[in-house]
Amino acid sequence: MAMTGITYQMTSEDVASRSLQVTVDPDRLEATERRAVREYAKSARLPGFRKGHAPEPVVRRRFEVEIRRFVLEESLRESWDAILKETSLKPTADPQVRNVIYETGKPLTFEMQVEIRPEIKLDKTGGFTVVRKLAAVTDEMVSNQLQELREQRGTWSPLPGVRAKPGNLVSVTVTTIEDGVEPVPGQPHDLVLGQGQAIPELEEQIMAIAPGESGDAEVRFPEDHADESRRGKTRKVRIAVHEVKEQLLPELDDALARELGDFDSLASLTSRVRDDLEVDARRRSDDELNGDLLRQIGEANSVPAPASMVHRLLHAYAESYRVETSQFETFSKSFEPIAQAQVKRELILDAVATAQNLRATEGDIDERVAKLAASRGVDPGKLYASLQQAKRLGELEHTITEEKVFGWLLQQSTVTEGAA
Image 1: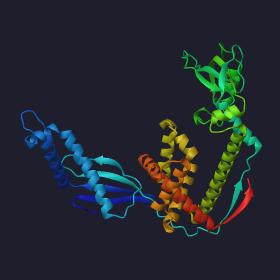
Image 2: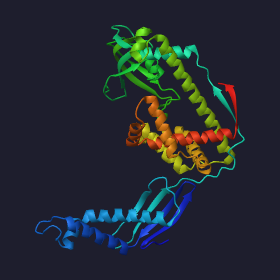
Image 3: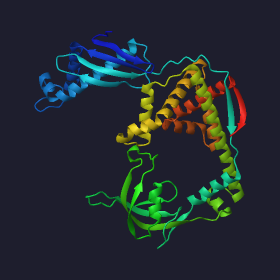
Image 4: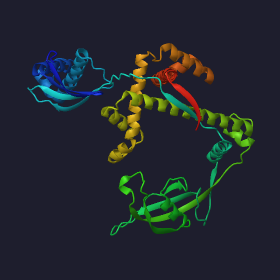
């Protein structure tokens, strides 16, 4: 298709992306270049010429790089604007541009990879059976949570001359020993034994060495180690234990409760901990219930997980977890099923929200902000402005939409109660 000097052709497509080959003819490029020259000529201050009076040839030579960049950027922008205007594409993000060929006197050519939101048609959205499994909050769970609160307020005290045991904080240096290579000691680092911060064999060796001493040992990485390249491999290491500390915990009493927050006694703290655990249990139960329902809907309607959307989500995960580029392939293999499930989830929710007109309205958002403001004792207008400034209104809108969609979906199916 042609649009005043811009030609494009669809080269490939799937349910979530389109690839286009775009050409901008030389006449259009020349016109854009003349416009760029005029713009630079107006503002340029060049030696020997008054502002805005430098000859065009001089401006072209002086700003050759800037003018070329201007022409390229303007041509890409104008091409994308024209394509959006002339087609029915509904992109989910700006296009990716690649394979740019830009030579003087010749057409500009490039490829655009465009991600679009697939239009999913759901033939069956009801008639399913799901079980709500609510786990009971036990006294042991409450005690464990209170213990964690004690540990957060604990202090560490040195244990001179005492070998470490699980639960101790150790300062160690671990140096890899290779044949024929002089080992270079690393920096000391701290870890709490028994919390999975180091492989089990290494922790065992650390506990065999007294503070102030060192020793050589061979450690074998487990078969399920996160780094595939190390699984089952053996390394010779030198371990130096610098210090061992034990944790001293405060008494679990009214004083600790008051220190932890607005609690007048241990009983009120314990009650709040139980309430919080019950809220978490209900949230997990709802998540599992909704997840099972979406899984059944996805299977019944053969909802796809487009590769382009999965790939983009995997990169977002990797960036969030700060995964090194060299580890991305291993990371993606582990997280691909999670990304696929998330993509299907979003497609189903979006399709239902659109078909049933369940998207959050401005009234829904205002009502939710008012409730949040009341619970926090703040002015609704100030809270709204704060959320807007933090760019979190979209997140709130998404949450409300999901709640409305799940509410509607659960009404179309049978929900039974069961024990977790």
